[in-house]
Length: 337
Image (cartoon, rainbow, N blue to C red; front, side):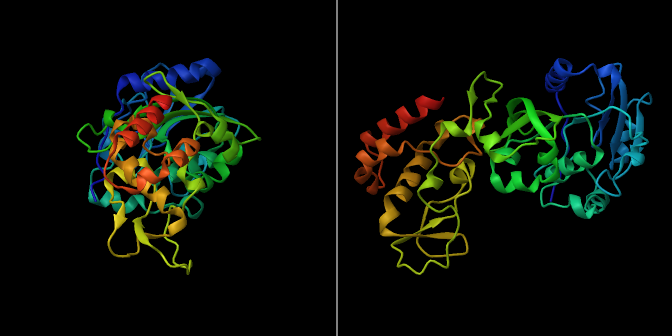
């Protein structure tokens, strides 16, 4: 497993500061980056604390910065970073996520997975978001995959964080900024959260109007998703007789990578029944056109205009592209892009 090493470009750092400066006088706060790497966010004349498990990276951070060589997910509390309980705190940075971190040596990779029990999750980025709630900052301004918010399983995993913080500003950028040679790009959100006892529920997220670097806006409530009509995951307990098998659905990016209909069942196959076959045929066709969609839709579920689809649904049973299907997707995508 290559955990990699990424710099945060200066223009991204500046976007984060512009968000913060709209809501806070930064000179009144201590700014903590608990996964600071080389210290990309330490660009202003402010009170900073930097921490990282990568000792080599920390050596590159300015000696003017108060630094801690430590695992920020282990034995976590304010005292660990010499932060007083009444100290006004902001957390900033670009924490590790999706198995990509600032760590470059095998020993560090092993040490990193010693994590406080309440912070453990399969994705380190969610572990870091959980850690911020423990430190109780007034604001959090960090980069993380948009999927942490718009996928319900990930959102539920945020638990204490989403119960005590609310998204108040954002900008979505492409992972291409960090991994330009990747075959698929996914949306990363520069997210500003404020401490708020109301927190966030998923209804709040569905209504929230996300902004993209390209100048567009969208909310989950704008879409009718295919999950309203079919299953995304294997359904082995369903005893009905299937007519076909289909690969597990995760999001649009996963659809681009994976097959659709499967000749044989496997642990990743969904049973398709006669009554919903047309919808799975729709997904098969959606895959053929998905490359036309912008990166910021990559973590969305497959979407549909169900009323228009039902009028021509029989056409989708033929898995070869037809002009009527091309026209449908051209109009569907034009509505959102």
